[in-house]
Amino acid sequence: TGKKAWGFKAKAQVLASGALGGRAFMIGADDKYFYALDEVTGKLLWKFKADEFTGGATVGEPEGTVYVGSGKKMLHAYFLNGTKSFEFKTKAQVCSTPALDGSGIYFGDDGGDFYKLDRASGKKVWKTRF
Image (cartoon, rainbow, N blue to C red):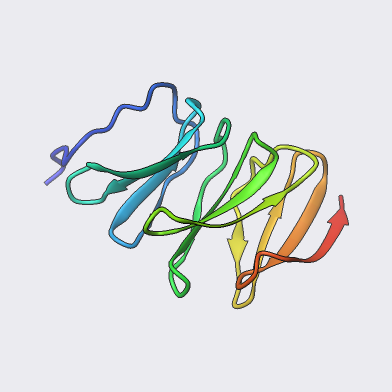
């Protein structure tokens, strides 16, 4: 119908792309929070604080996890219920949108390092420099 279904106002601008998964729309904002909103009502389901979020998020549906990088120099992995799965520390902020395959999470940091992490454990499989 083209009608606005709902709205949500973060305390700062949103530059990142959102992701859908587990009946939630998830997006990071420059107010240093990553938000999970009910996809039907827009009601806040959960949030966590890290630093600025300028990259997009990716959802791994099989494991029920959202992956997102931040200005806190980390890749964050949260279960779709809002509990933390793991956080992986990098040397520079992570503004890229993670990509997934059957076993890995792929992302780069702003320092030129590119990583593959194991989806199940969050452990580094390899790192290369661009």
